[in-house]
Image (tube, rainbow, N blue to C red; front, top):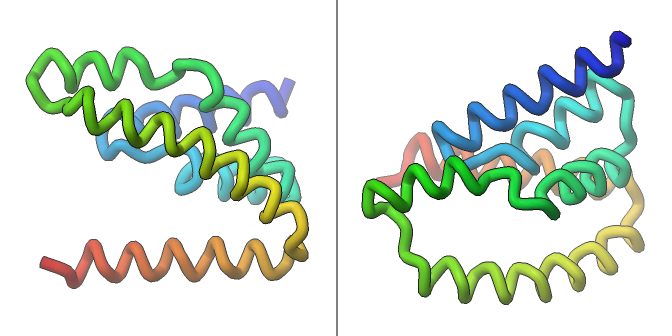
Length: 120
């Protein structure tokens, strides 16, 4: 029952952050699955991707669309190439040692955070 509660909390947090900031999978779910449930890096990434395999963000995207904030042509191109990139990236990721992959993930989060904080 505790695990179910943790999963519900992770889903709610990721959903709220997705709706507010457009983030959720990598930035929210992966670390929470690792820290709260002890998932290894591969399990956390795979589970996060499995969640996003269904249209879980449809209502949030629809809200933005209704306000005129979605470019469907750009979204379509990104979605199509995301499928290819996601497949190739997953094939590559599982060949990398989990400790190194976790460090790469952490450094990427820091770099993006610094760019968001100090960039124009």
